[in-house]
Length: 165
Image (cartoon, rainbow, N blue to C red; front, side, top):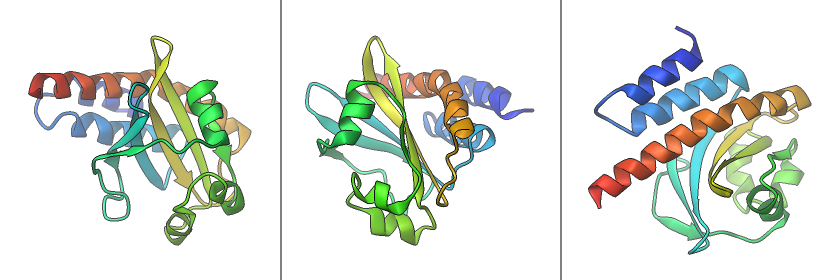
């Protein structure tokens, strides 16, 4: 079964959701684009807060509460213009992420943040980090194939959260 079919099957699965779908989205991302550190963040435009809902390295990047969105040029690119942010070296990463030293300690020196847009708003980002120079124009283009599966995963998270409320 290819990674896209596996994601579809994971999305349909009952129990352990949305973690099952998130794990399959991680595998799909690795197959399509390549990823060492993979996280998913949601955004609430009304409160200006972000929330990490998944991490493939929970010891370094745990799933915890919310935090205010830090206004940088990243915000303009991703949240305002709905474009993928690309940084291919640690200096570019350090300009927008205060935790760049932790990122580097995990063997990551490049990043892409893919905005997932539904109804005109960014509902989350698919965050991929890897070795320096990894995210070539071809890989960034391939990341666009993650937007629809990402929307399904983020909407599943919202559905499950609403049921629990």
